[in-house]
Length: 443
Image (cartoon, rainbow, N blue to C red):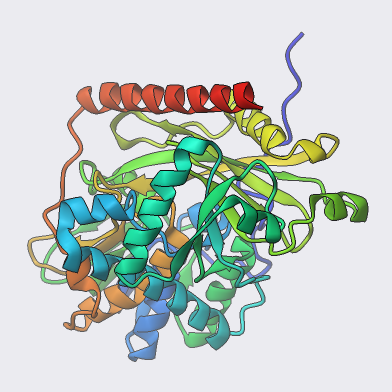
């Protein structure tokens, strides 16, 4: 007898197709700019361009937000790179400081966007905490917090007693408190941007995946039943970009898994006593994330990542991964053993080899632009990337573009990429399992 299927969402519990789904492209159009992908990057770019008076066509193969923008855990964080000591080691003090300033600015720009377009997305400006779960994490987190604060980041180290004062659950023993940001409802946020884009006059075509992008002095984006000819094209497809034959060596699409519990009742909330509701993500090699939502559920996950051959997207339903992230949740939140998990889902994120986002051009004419590689921090970074791409379209340079400019490192070709990915992932998972065994042994 086969095992019953876990409660799985093909997209996420955050959103469903909107009632005003826009028609598919069925004509040959002309525009100033054609944007491929109506997630956070594409919608933010479209809004910035419309504010400049540009005629914008936005193409989406499903509906706006159906990709990673509507699937993520909803943390709005100023996190960038692997960590601040690594940024200092590879880029030096001045560049590291600008990268941290970019991450802070991305959070602030997202908050301004929410206010400007009056998006009701349950945003809670409570900050997030990178939390240690083992004594060996304490010194590393203290060092990273000091380095980031020294470079101007709005962070500080929290010792165990300070976490307890905030009501952070007992499993989390120290942490770096990121004062900027917090968390939000991803579905309401991306659909709020969609509404704003339609109101602003963006020509949005849903159910319109591109089949070809022809380079030239003017770009031609072709869909099954129509095309758009434009002065510029913007690829706002992030982890989906290798699937359209672009940036296959620059970024690696990874799938992360998430869950949401049933709502906690008053007694469970009181026993948990998570007063500040800060977002949490752990100092594991492959992090775990948790937050208490406005509807009093726990959303969590990550911990398990999957990658596909040649930049393909890993499978969606992954029972072993779902069971692993639920087991981690049960271990961190022992007082919630009786709370059911009601939903599992996942989404694809894009990593560059240096964990940093990239803005660039993928065409000899310089008029096919892209912004990709948010490494799991795309709620903030993708929103600001829209303003940066719009500036590039009009021939200007955004103040933070120089901070992201660097020589891009290419992922190795297949089969080396597949083999290396498997080895790295297995090693990191083994290290995290060892950490968790040490935690259990020390109780």
